[in-house]
Every structure is written in structure tokens, then in C-alpha cells.
Length: 343
Image (cartoon, rainbow, N blue to C red; front, side, top):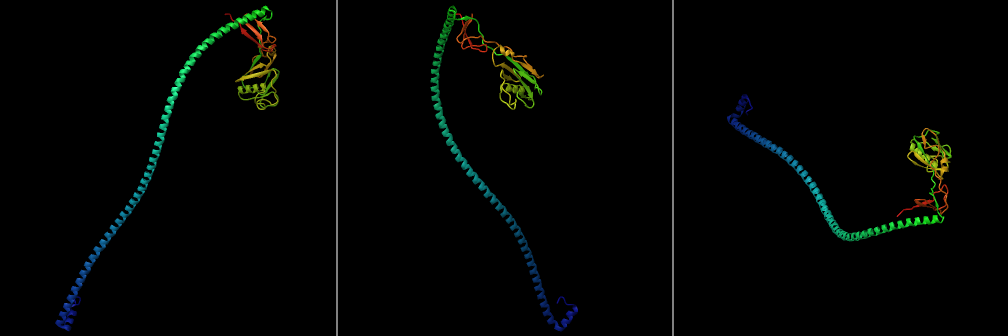
């Protein structure tokens, strides 16, 4: 009714009459009240719905927070389990350490007992050693006394021997069985060969009857290998003279031992010695053709002929009695002497 125009309402009134219009107005008012109530109910419902939606949103937020806390709580629980496992492992390790400590303590206790036993034995040994030392001291004192006595007897014996030698010499001389004189033993001739530097290719040195040639490559008998240092070259020459180590590498393999002379070497100096004693060795040659080799002389020197004597021969001079222990030639050294001392 509220939506009808004034003309429409007048036509309707004319058709229905006043009573009909009142009925319509009352119906219209009732419907308006119903609509208003419905609208109010709808608004209230909307408000309730809005409130419910807010509550739902809050509930979701609370649920999310609770879920996060649950996740955190789960992580804490996991960490707690891990920590518990670690603690349990440490407890097991600690138990093992304690067991080992007990074992070590037992071992140490055993060692202490053994050490105590060793100490007791050491004291016993020390007491025994002390007793032996006292006995040894007594033995040493006795030994000194015996040595002193023996020394006196030796002096007396030396005097007796000197007197006996003098008496024997006098008796033998008087009987014509001991000649007078001072015999000598034979001495070998010697010489020196010094290598001042490494020899040059083809340098030579004659030692006795053998000529040695220095070569970078060994080609014939008596070739000696040239090396860098003078000492190495001296060693190679010494080996060749004596047929020592190095045949085929330090000197030629066909080299023979020197028949007349032997040698010794110290650094770059050789001492050469006649193999037969006596002045005959003074005739052996030393000849060099090299600017790097120095010789003691053109020949060996210092040989002395020995005094010829038969085994058992005696000679006497003012100081000694000489006895020939074996047949002695000019090349031998078989004379011995005993000093004659006054007393």
C-alpha cells in the first residue's frame, strides 16, 4: 500500500469502500511490522554471523599459535631425547673410565708390592756387597803388601842377573869364548814420494826397477789411474806398488807386485822401503818425470848391513852382552842385548 500513488489509492478506496481500505491498511501495517521484524532479525543474525566469523578467525589464529607451540614442543622433546642419549653415553663412558681406574689402581698396587719386594732385595744385596767390599779391601791391602815384597825380590833378582851376566862375560872372555865388539842389526833403506798435485796425463815415476805411468784410461801394466785429488792418486800408486785393492780400476790389471820395494801411504805422501835390509837398498832408484811429484832423492837411503854371526854367538862391550839368537847375515836382525848394570 505504501508504494501506491494517491490516484491508485483513491480508485482502490472507491472500489473497496472505507471498511475494505481499513482492512487493507491493517494488513499493510502488519506486513510492515513483519518486514521490519524480519529486517531486524536479519541484522541481528548478520551481527551474530560477523561475531561468529571473528570468533572463528581468532580460533584459527589460536590454533596456528597452538600448532607452532606444539611443533616447538616437539623439537624440544626431540632435543631432550638427544641430550638424554648423550648423557647416557657419557654415563656409560664414565662407568668404563671408573672400571679402568679400578684396574689401574689394582695394577699400581701390585707394582707397589713388587717395588717393596725389590727394595727389600736391594737392601739385602747392598748388605752383601758391603761385606764383599770389606773383604775386597782386605784382599787389596794384602795384594799391596805382596806386591811390595815381590818388587823387592825383583830388584834383588835384577841385581843378581846383572852380576851373573858380568861374571859370565868375564868368564867367557877369560876362556876365549866371547869376543869383544858391538854388533848391529840390518836396517832397510827408505825414501819418500810426495804427490803435490794430481799428476798429468803420461807423468811417470820409477820406484826401484818398475816405472809407473799415470793415465786417465788404463792401457797397460803399471798404469795408475789419474783422479782429482793428490791423496787419491797417492793411494792408487800405493795400491799398484803393493798389488793392493783396485786392480783393474785403480791400476792396470796386469800390474805385478814391486819385487824390490814396498810402500805405505798417509794422505798424499808415500814412504817406500827396500824389501831386503842392508846397504844394497841404497842402490834402488827413485826417478820422476813430472812437475807434480817430489822425491826424497834419486835413490833410497839409510840402509845398514847387519853384523854377521852364528846362532848362539856372544859379543861383549863395556855396557852390554850381545847374543845372536839365529844365524845373522848382513840383511838380518837377529842380535839381542842385555845391559850390564853395576850394583
